[in-house]
Structures are given as C-alpha cells and as structure tokens.
Image 1: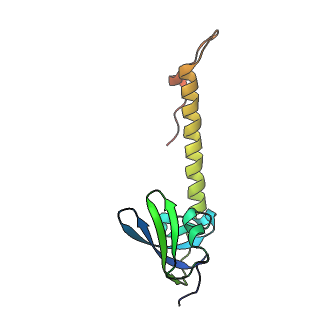
Image 2: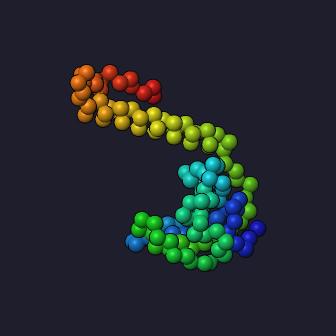
Image 3: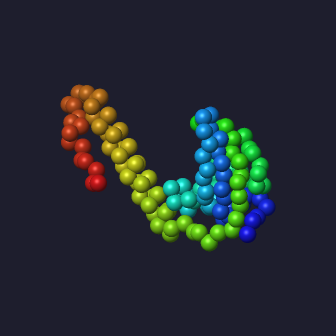
Length: 131
C-alpha cells in the first residue's frame, strides 16, 4: 500500500545524496524513545526525520548534515514492523554508563591537578567502574 506523505509509523525509503556518492536507507519513523537506527527505527525529532516529514514520494529536499547535500523520498508504505520493547532500557543503561565514566574521568582529572595544603589527591585511589 503506497501512502501520500511521510508520517510517523510508516516504512520510508530515502536516497541521501552526499558530495561524492548516494546511499539508500529504509526506516520507520518512531517516537524518539523508541529510536534505534541500526534496527531501522528513526527518531521523529532527528534532523533527517524533520526534513522528510510531510513530504511526498519523489520530492528532493535540501539536507545538509556532514557531507550530505539532499535527500529524496523513494517510497512510503505501511508496515507492521515495531521497535523492540527493550530499546529504551538499553538506551538508559548506555547513558548511565556514559555518565558514570564521565564522572570518574572528571574525578581523575581533578585528582591529578589538585594540590592543597592538606595533601594531594591520589587518582589511583578512585574506584574503577564495574563493566
């Protein structure tokens, strides 16, 4: 079933023109908390989704991201494809790990650069993260 305009929940095929090449991508536009581009789910607030929402098949849209220059909508169809329920949980876990690593790095930088009247901090005494 072909549809008229790009909207969330549809299977979209696009062709992105870069400076030296073009690439085709296929994805479903979903709410941001369900996004998983590697699995074919593009968050609706991403620049690419914003560029194509409401566009029709065949439309070429200026799209400047990195060396991308334009995007063309190839097809729009309905789909039964849905994101995994664990996507948000995986994303939250990844964010928690990144924040913990950033906090640890900040503590090490502080410990390495601080010298006070009560003594120096020892960066080796900072607890390693559980992996």
